[in-house]
Every structure is written in C-alpha cells, then in structure tokens.
Length: 224
Image (cartoon, rainbow, N blue to C red):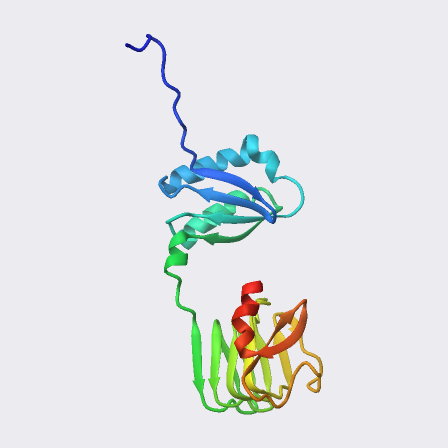
C-alpha cells in the first residue's frame, strides 16, 4: 500500500535538554549524544520559552546531569552564565556517569613528624599527620584531617565551608576543633574524650560537634 501524497509520519524531536522537578529542586538532563552547541541552544530556548515559568519563584537548587560526558570549566561557566538570568537558580553541581565510574583520586597531603608550636600546615584536600600536633600547632584542610597520634593543638577541617568533613585522631586533647564554621566547646567538653583507647573522629551532627569510634565513620557518612 502506497503512502497518500502529502502525508508524512510524525517525527520525534530529540531534546538536548530535559528539565525534571525533584523534591529538592530541579535536575537538568543534558543529552550526551548532542553537541555542546545544541545543548546551549536548547537550554536557552527552554529558559526563555514555555518552561520558563517552572524557574521562577524562591531559591531553586539545580543539579546538572551530563551523562557520559564531562564538561570542562569553560563549558561549565557558559552554562552558569545562561542560568544566571534567573537569580534564584543555584547550581549544586555537575554530575557525569564517567566521573562516578572513574572518580578522581582524592588530594591528600601526608606529613611525617610532629607539628610543633607555631607551626601551621594548610592544604586544599585531606591531611594525614603521622605524629602529634602539639599545643600551638595548627592544621587546616579543606577536606578531612587525620592525626595518627595526639591532637593537642588546633585542627580545622572543611575550612572552606565543607561541613561533611571530619577530624580523626588517636588521642583527642585539642586546643580547638573546628569543622566548617562550627567550633567545638571548651577542651574539657564531654564530647571530646582526652584518652581514647582507639582512634576516634569528630564530625557535625545536627550542627553540633560529636565524636564516634573510627569504625562508625563509613555508616555515618552513608546517612549524610
């Protein structure tokens, strides 16, 4: 049977960008089979088109899923610039399947020896101290801090606002503990035990400093 003249089968239009609502905000799904130029074009159309009404109102958290493609910083900045027309859209992050399959190794700084009074160690990542941190010594990390000895000085984990960071030590006798913007109470607080039989870690629980045995670290992080 021949097709009737003038009749065409409807075409399925492939969308480069799909916007979905979730409980915590919105997810922007980018088709990894489309070119970056097509993604930008479709995103701009949706931001100014029929779906623009979904993007108005109070602060909306946005997660961007890029499939099996990893955007570089230039591409991410172009996306941010497009979304900036809505001052209420806050990008939580860019997620790629490839980054989950092949995660980047953590940035870790290993210091062997005692951190003495007046000495300060800072690092953008995690810090592991093989030794003690003496009173007057200071350790600051954007990630976690682990002291394979006595912590008697100052330790500030998550110093750029990461409140998921932890501080681990064999013996807790700190001058001050700080995670993100939260500072521990005085050193004699019942939450910070001075003589630990095994390694412990400090973390934030409901905005307050708490201490647990190190074997609980994995299960606690799963809950966050």
